Image (tube, rainbow, N blue to C red):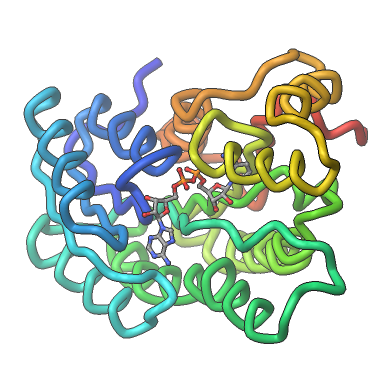
Length: 262
Ligand code: NAD
């Protein structure tokens, strides 16, 4: 499939490891230039170097926390200056802590909103004016399959990320006439540090071994395995591609069939 992404510029947030890193490399493999951010400059630069060496594309990196609104805006402006355009924006960040509802604090609710919803608002407000000028753009938010099927210990994620779906639908409706699509990808359990963190907490809460928690989880996933970061990345790249121009306002789950709804 011709993705039409060659020489486009893709922003991929939180891309020093895991799904973000796999997404950055997948865009680079299509010939897109990359603007990358995460909190740690060292690992971020390593991803940029790998992408440039393997795929001969241009890169721009800045280390900052995506919940810092002014840092997001400066980064997008600088990426546009350095790379000449902004075509794709993949929003991503770490997930909120896994905790039972009554143990959550108001500070954690505030942090979850800043990290997992407000940061997307910041990115969208910063990239949309460039996309409007070009009459072409792709925003893909990375959330979780919990937007469709809440997971018991992830009440912060379940709640805050549902708001992302409202935002995605709203932006898809408003900016569709200008050639801009806005979609959401919801991974299920994916083999990264984040799934290890959640399984460790689940094992501790139930008083079982990590291996037992992993085994139990597999019984709930129809394909009996976690997704790979590369599989989630492929879905994101496809939604950003030229052939996906008529798909907007959607949530695409990459969850091995975990969500049981129709
Ligand atoms: P990960 O922990 O492997 O990577 C997270 C990335 O986010 C890292 O690059 C980290 O540096 C960056 N990051 C974290 N907080 C940041 C911040 N405040 N500012 C900037 N960068 C920040 O996680 P992952 O598995 O790649 O998950 C990516 C997203 O997908 C997370 O939001 C996670 O909750 C969600 N998700 C993951 C799974 C899974 O099983 N892995 C399942 C569903 C949803």
